[in-house]
Image 1 (cartoon, helix red, strand yellow):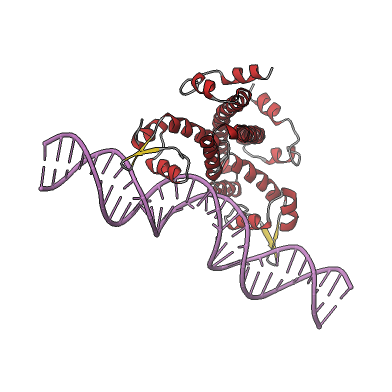
Image 2: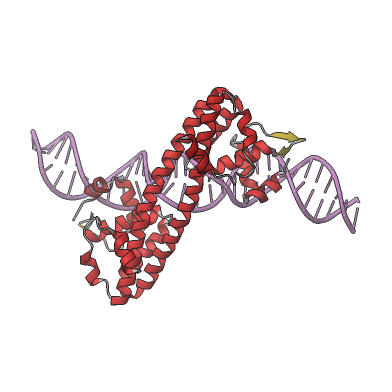
Length: 145
Length: 145
DNA sequence: CCTTGACCTAAAGTTAGGTTTAGGTATTAC
DNA sequence: GTAATACCTAAACCTAACTTTAGGTCAAGG
């Protein structure tokens, strides 16, 4: 069993955040000892899942629903599985988006690197076709090899 | 030249958002024709960059600074390059984090799939070592091959 | 003429996810 | 016994990024 202060250190989260999560119902089966929160293994694992679901883009109120399903027992396995499948798809989609962003960023790095060398971006401005269906990565990699 | 309505359609963004971006100084060289905004190629490219920088996690006020550098001219090439390098690093770090999240999600999918098959998660609960330094991907892939 | 549609502004409202404040309890350290 | 810690609550506050509201201009169509 851990105190809120120990959890705060372990997860590197402010105490206020842990209390906020509790208030929002993210630890539905947490016990208290004369008012003081008792974080057990269940809550440690819950917090790991909270961080995962948050990173995946899930809102607090939906994380709460999940935690309630966990308390409900085996009847909710299917819902829980479905939730994780949906989150998996969302993260995969976000990674594709981020990869596109990364390509654009790499292109811009190359662009300004070249502009600095040239002392001007005038030649560059015309080079780039509208909407960039160029293989940006290739341009960048060539510039760096 | 495009109207705000045309830009809204092209980028699939609400008109209110475009006006908000303008108010926040994200189109510092945009012209007006008797009060009406005139979006030119400069603004189209600006909006592409705005979306990229936003996805990369940059705040509006910092995007504004970048747009001002663009107006300032060649003296700010180095700053602009630095900004993109920093964003690139941030996105790369986020992708690593997302990959970890994805591994956790895959594990949880496998976990509930197995729990459904078993009718219970009791056997599973003990199997998972604290903190999961398991090769989750391998477990999942095995379960799916 | 008058109404419809596309534009405009300033200012207030909204939402998520916390953080801060103000005041209180309980245990340990000197 | 009193002072420093670590915990508690309720409620107010905060920030970013929008969105909504209320009221106004202007041009084209019937």
